[in-house]
Image (cartoon, rainbow, N blue to C red; front, side, top):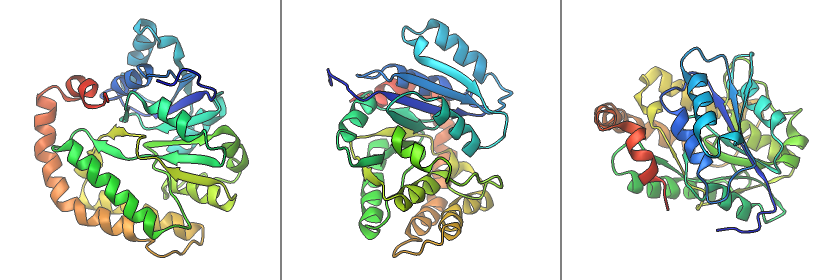
Length: 286
């Protein structure tokens, strides 16, 4: 355990109708080996039970006072994320999704990673908790990311479900990031490219582990292809051309058919056996 944490961490969680996953996400944030300074929840016009559940957790959890809830009326992930970063007061802005379950040493590992003063942004590998063979999947994800990073030494990318920035890095690029009002880009890749343009260093941290849902694999082929094409649209908008630029797209398209079938069949079993309420604690302790 890190006893003398000098860098404070704000965790930012955009939320839009996430009643099935948000409580497990926030509990993981509240039960860290090193607690964050705050957990910034930004609601983007949810009309389900998300806000009620968050308010109850804030009231009943022993660390619930760390949760701060804000709202963003302009619909969209980018505007919601930006509001979270504006409200954050930590030295480091952690950025995860509402279906992300961070490992209990996540904040601690962020502090260690940012001990290097040159590093301005970090990302880590993910484990898909609603798929079988989870820890094999984590190893496969780690290998894939290392291959992609090895092919693209000039550019490093962040993964929005599991990433963090220095506050000072965000200050340098916040007026330049794309607002993407048409919802065409990968907002995390956009941030990565703006960090590169500002000559700010991004690092991949293998110990920064988070679990996410593979629910993207449950979407239709048309929806999934549109999601994958966000890579090209984001790079093209920045006039970026690099060796291996389309590699993530090729990989994601190739794994979709078998994982789509697997997710549809296993997802039913996962939910029947209790879903995240049963699995979240035992899966992400280290």
